Image (cartoon, rainbow, N blue to C red; front, top):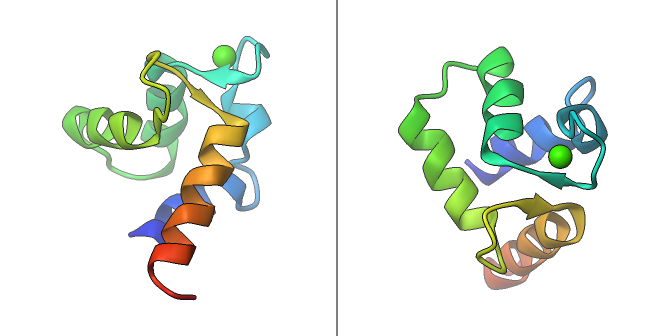
Length: 80
Ligand SMILES: [Ca+2]
C-alpha cells in the first residue's frame, strides 16, 4: 500500500507539484481527490482516509514536508 501511495505522489506524471493545482505548496482534499481519481479507482472514503493519515499537523491540508516525513517514519518503523 505504501509503495502504491509513494508512486502516486512521486512517480512519473503524478508528482506533488502537478497535484498542487493552485500552487500554494499544500494539497487540499479537493486537489488530492482530483489527482487520485485520475490515477486509480479511489473511493471518496479511501481518499479521506489517506488525507487524514497524511495530514500530520491536522490542519486539513497535506504539505510536501509532511508527506516526506510520513514516508520516512513509515520506512523507519518497518525497518527498511
Ligand atoms: Ca494547493
